[in-house]
Image 1 (cartoon, one colour):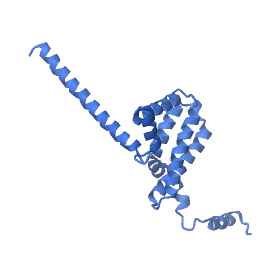
Image 2 (cartoon, rainbow, N blue to C red; image 1 turned 90 degrees about the horizontal axis):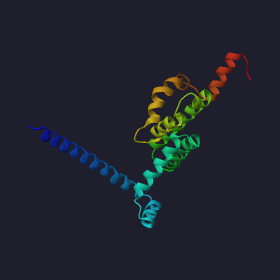
Image 3 (tube, rainbow, N blue to C red; image 1 turned 90 degrees about the vertical axis):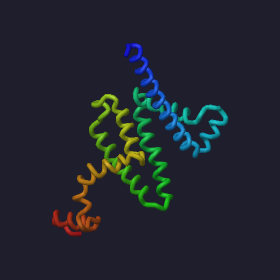
Image 4 (cartoon, rainbow, N blue to C red; image 1 turned 60 degrees about the vertical axis):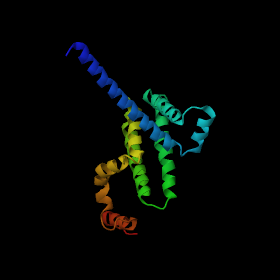
Length: 188
């Protein structure tokens, strides 16, 4: 086999790999476009501008990430992503009949609150480069129902930490008050 034949085979393999990647990317874009078609405002925007809605959303997402990456209003943008998107889905969960989505979003808010308290105590922005980029990825991971990140954090960190307090039999506020009175020796 000559060197030209080897190069031709390698080029054919590389071309077929690129074609496979392009086909998979197009499939993902098509499925994302179908998902975005549920929103009438995006459909109207696409009709008025002749710009595919999937490109608009991806472009805005890229700009959003760019601003966070270079810390141009990073704290505001990350906190907005951490409040607005989960807030919308939390309200949606409250108006639905099922309880599984209620549990998911309650867990998210507990983990997010715990993370925010720890973040304010540590002042992490000054200690970690690209902090808001990592926080943004973490918040998205926690908030997306596909990843169940908040559930993972809760079950691996918070549940073992707080289980002794809440799993005791009779951990109601009246029982806690009675226990406190026993410790202090004061009865009301």
